[in-house]
Image 1 (cartoon, rainbow, N blue to C red):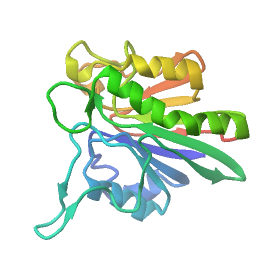
Image 2 (image 1 turned 45 degrees about the horizontal axis):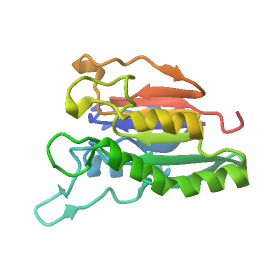
Image 3 (image 1 turned 180 degrees about the horizontal axis):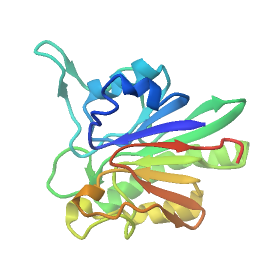
Length: 214
């Protein structure tokens, strides 16, 4: 199945008539954060597919117009500390999320390592339930920040979470997809394999082929 993943930067190419042609066959939109809510609403409205998202460190209330303030993108599901499923061709894809980045100054959607561990604890019951009932905990984990040592930086804002590495070892998602560390700013944009998980850094957009039967 085709999945459109977006993060951090609005793509003028997608914000045009080219969207439907370029993203023909896309069945799901995933957002890793730091995007204007009207942009996400535009994508899901034009493509008419589900949207699962997490918030980034720059997300908050968004002034869409002088009279309308958005707290979140309408038409999407926030999967922070949650697991949602979507069916494609009779096969189920399990998608979970963890929002935010490493703490660097007290704004919303920022967490230290201990706080992120607590967030993982809160999603853990759903993961164990899935493993018992479905034979796997999770297929795709979307985050805003990267794992520690992969695609991350040395400054507090862009340092990755060690907790994500432990998450991968324990729950074995097929993919971890994140944003936050832009390759255009010099961060590593290569795709990595860590244990059983493919780790993908998205800035702007990427169209991925994910086989629910795998």
